[in-house]
Image 1: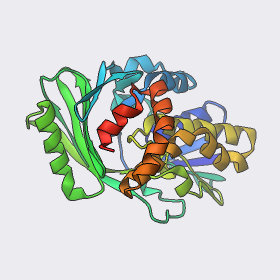
Image 2 (image 1 turned 180 degrees about the horizontal axis):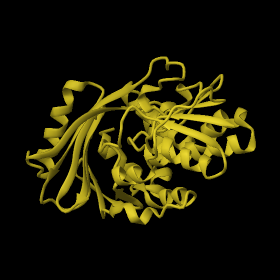
Image 3 (image 1 turned 180 degrees about the vertical axis):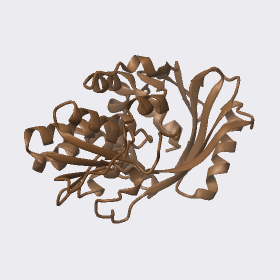
Length: 313
């Protein structure tokens, strides 16, 4: 089978290597000439270790550090398994010569928020983001300042470097969110090594259907594989593995169902975001036990009481 992947991010590069190392003829193309350093420096370690071992990559080589705490709105939560990794270096090591194949039998849309090949999403929800890299002398934890419509973050990258940014439904509120984070945690404005803007899709997978349209199939953020907390790396890798398995078994017709089933936790977290944005606080509270069970096993240790305190409900 001749396969063309568009988009050389986390999902696209991983899927390229899964396919090519298993005998498929596959090409990959990206509008960028090299990876950039935008969002998404954090990932669940055990999941990343397992996924990347499938393509012979030792994920430990890219881990920068494991913060002890996630500090959200002043609440200190014990970090379970989140590590900060050098995403740009990892992608650079997986980057191959970009090319476009003639008459591919299957086209993979791994273009993230662009969703350049699949049909457009009805009532999509894409948040603008702004981020930069700065130097600070702050204890190396993950810091988050969140409100209903968005959040700001500071991720430690080691050697006093920090990735600082924010995303919000309303673009004009992004600088306000970043300033709140600076004031709360002591990130005084400093010289920036780089600065850029991006977008992130925060919409449950079930609202991103179809995942398959003719000979086009989506993966990663293009089909909503981003959690309610903005975590996209591990879900995108999971979606790429599911797609590879469906292609390998010749049962692409099962792909949509498997994504909705195996990434149900992403669906649950995005339904929570929906409830909060639409002021349906009772619905949000009812989802909390499921979210706590999910996150206590993957990311941070907390309780329903902690989450209610975070979101003021």
